[in-house]
Length: 432
Image (cartoon, rainbow, N blue to C red; front, side, top):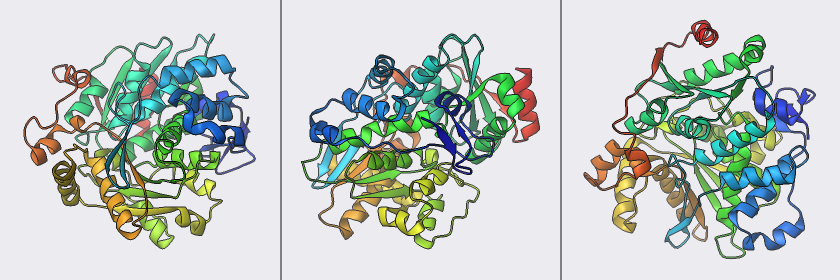
């Protein structure tokens, strides 16, 4: 299959170029030349398939023309070594737990798949692959874990100074080895702009063999569509879910749209954000106006210029009317987020993280207007990753820290401070 730029459909590349170079030279994003649809035979049996079988069917639909089935099956099975269970809080009120991977965040699905696919695509290549990633919280940790000690790779993580939680920061900065963290004196949007500038510098990208691990990379998005199908099959037959997606860079919601395009029956999507409500405002008014992000409790969603918005537009042919017929937006304040954390614990004895809390608020609002709806709220990170917030709302020790996160607490933070000047960043990459 070939892949084209969202800015120029006539610019087309093969899978290896799309995945390893991540970004077209015109600053668009890659999309498949044709969106696959899973055939009727799959949809006859999908409710009886395992998570791994669903993942393989989806991966084969997208990548099967380029990656042999045995290799693709191995990539999928290595990715899906943990579950994404659906938890029911009440009638029509479901939570999809996406935090059972090694770094306790949904980004583990995409990062693990991408690392394995890139390893297959670069087999026999003796050049070091440099993986650049900007993170607002969880992406960096998942990528660091997925690529740690992978031969022939080095990972450079850019994160905004003072804008990730303490344990998230340790996941970025305490692994060492082939993982380097850059502490950027700016916002996530600044980090993302630096990463994009490196890819648009074609000489630099070629010289350093650069690739991206952000959701601008299709290898991150496709595996995230696995769990939408896996979640929907856990509902009673005939029930089409409303997926409520806590959103920042909008890769997760875009993956849900891909699942829908594959044929998954979906009633609606709700994009739930914090005060960084660029997309909910677009869905309301038809005006898309990126702006500088503001810091909130739900830091992984602090994005003012979401990259994947152009993919969302492409999936709806650029039609605002079509997009808003399938996606609604909602946003909530930090005070509302704190109250939701307390309320979910009080009502259901369930600990929900700040991002999931925003999703739960949006789901409740949707069900109030649509009483027959079955909402699935994506719980994107384990609440233990946000100890300050959780302890402030629920009390000391209310959320035990899993061992694989607790072991990082006493490790030394190692990060290189850097500003937002693109020329300085370019020089650093060349000199290191």
